[in-house]
Image (cartoon, rainbow, N blue to C red; front, side, top):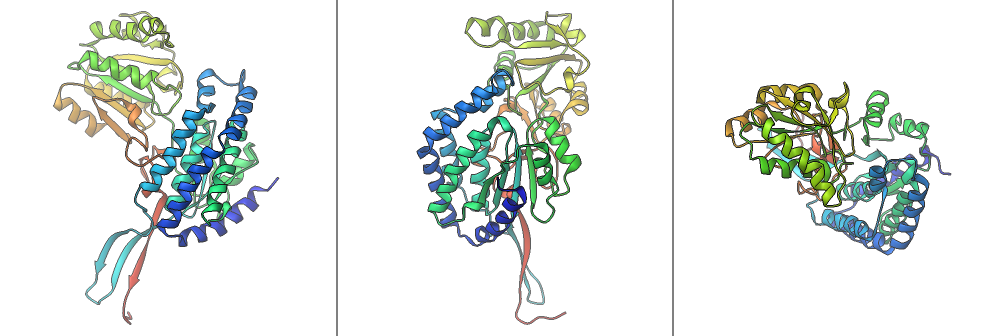
Length: 419
């Protein structure tokens, strides 16, 4: 087994090669990686089948869906890599140019971070997304996945490294740690001088561990207690469509809705509609129903599970929705301020004034008016894909694409000036 330290040393060497690669070479590598991914379909699906077999009975059905791959998902992953190849290269872009009176020309220039370390759990598609964004932005990438997904991720990395080699770039631009223990993750968190940016993608426990223990620069990402607020003036049919999509289209992802807030003026009419839409109507269509966890005022209108003390502070990642009745937009905003993780929130309203108040006051990375929180995604934001969704404010916020994987330096040109 190759040690984490040895892998990081190889990545440090690879980052210097990538920093000198031009856009054409990086794009050739990405297209070769996409081709190699599809060429490795049989091996990747066999590894994934073994991972799924080992995980059944140990993780939920929703989490099994996150782990599962099929030909359609692999095709989408390859298309995601090709989409990144088609995007502008952020490295080398002049962000600002200033000509000084003494003749110096100062250019603020985007440059790669260097070595990215990504710790993630049971989503094999993160492997190809992270690799594509890292290569295009000129960064080496060291991955550490959850043990449930290791076979799948290693098969993906093996294919992608073949594409890198075919394009003349070192395979060590991309690596997957063989150590899936907590100690292995801890080694990445403390690899000062070897890791330039750590990006954790996973549940609240993983994010907290990284933020509390990392000695390398770390981006706080992912945990999504996302809210949809149905205002007094909302189009109720629109609200039902938005909530069903936000909650049930893929409940295991971080941009899925976890909490529904309903204005008291709309609640008597809307809540029975919501209970029907997410319960009997889904069952009649052969779909999984959504369990409603109801605060007292909501429970006085419809039947469901009484909300417990933690239900408005839980990322369920399942077919569960906490529901609360509020008396105003300001109360909805205050609830979100107290319970949100700063990911994605939405208001459904016909009132421009309430929409403006909500978008101005809600302090989250993505704030929606009359649309689903499920759009918080690098692909949907035109970034090709994302390496994570930052819920902090420095240096990146929201879906992190190519630009967010660069820092900058100042390049100053003169003709003999001295100070």
